Length: 350
Ligand code: ASP
Image 1 (tube, rainbow, N blue to C red):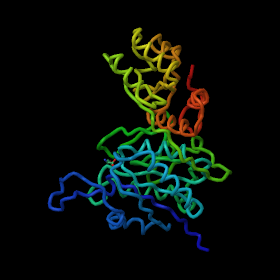
Image 2: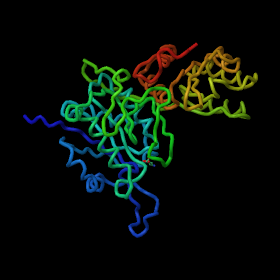
Image 3: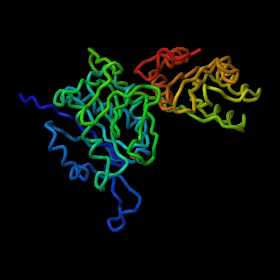
Image 4: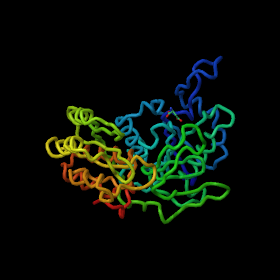
């Protein structure tokens, strides 16, 4: 048997593999292309002493990503799990953090790297960031070959950083440094040397991989803004079959204190049994539910604190827990518990 590590490349589309549809007009809006096209420009893979095997899913602009697609990805990983040292998912940047979060929940007990990457510039274009991101992601997915510690979690590689997927934020619509994670240290830094922050990576599981295959789609997320009408909020809470809402609040978890607004919240929690989770609109920091009266009023109406979770993490975690079929109380409890490294255990919850 050969000792060459095998990496499974799951291609889902995104800018990395996109092309202008009109050959004579390079500025025509980019559309997803097949992995065959991408492979022609991925000569650098031949220089890596690993075997790479492509698995093509439906190539999409990641703006078309959806929960069913996430479940399909989880199945591909589970079905191929034993044959590979790790997985690289090529993905559009727009919804990459949602996908990374979803996979972190859907895949339980992993002991191998699942690295998601993409690029701001297609691999076919000069000056692209695709080649570096792609090659680096493959290296993290073949840790023995490159003498890197195994990072057994769902991560995002971009520019020179490996980030925990369910902590990451897309921070630039164009720059090479497209992602960051402000509430959690970076997992690894890539340059001439590779520095892995071993103290912050997850422990490998000794149990067999298990995948969840249900996500609740009847959830919603919205931003509070000055002047938001209580009638608007009532309409949102009245959406048929709605189960949960992520409320994006100001600063440390604050929202309007007026009576009509709070009444809508109270009704949604107590009469409609909605799970409402408070996360901050800020890219850095945590909800401190009792720092201000404007936050404490939400807490006393039954809104739970999402602490330092990103909006993506809170929303997708809600889809996951409700999809598991937990009752409301258990869902609320688990929303505040660290399940996959998505929330800091010591962040204030009450
Ligand atoms: N719209 C593209 C996508 O998310 C953007 C990108 O990949 O950078 O598929």
